[in-house]
Image 1 (cartoon, rainbow, N blue to C red):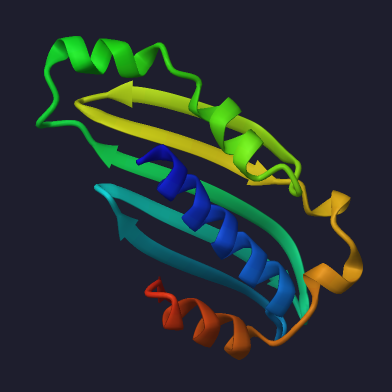
Image 2 (cartoon, rainbow, N blue to C red; image 1 turned 90 degrees about the vertical axis):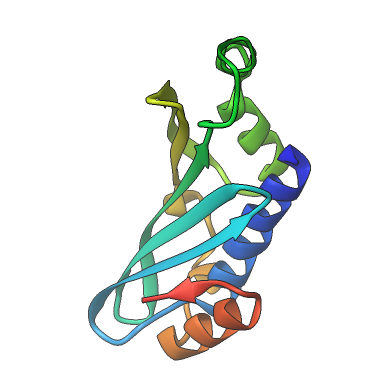
Length: 137
């Protein structure tokens, strides 16, 4: 499940970086649910250039036993995400399990990305992500 989750996020980031977004200062939020995990990508734009990006993973653990949750708490999801997205530099990654839910958040360091990876049309980005099954607003 983790490999599919990481793969989806990696693919999402790649598409967003290749197609970019634009048209003044704007924000794009795209979500998808896969294997019981909700993945959200937020990107902020200034014109046709990505200014900031963040990822969030949410997993409902209500069907997990306390023993299973205890085992999940020992796993380093930030390390797994960083390894699966090695072409991006992630920062401020945090994971938290509370109220029978796992949440992992991270920022993508866009200052480490090339300008050509951060430019493009917002409509193209939205269309490409929606074709992959994401819901964008």
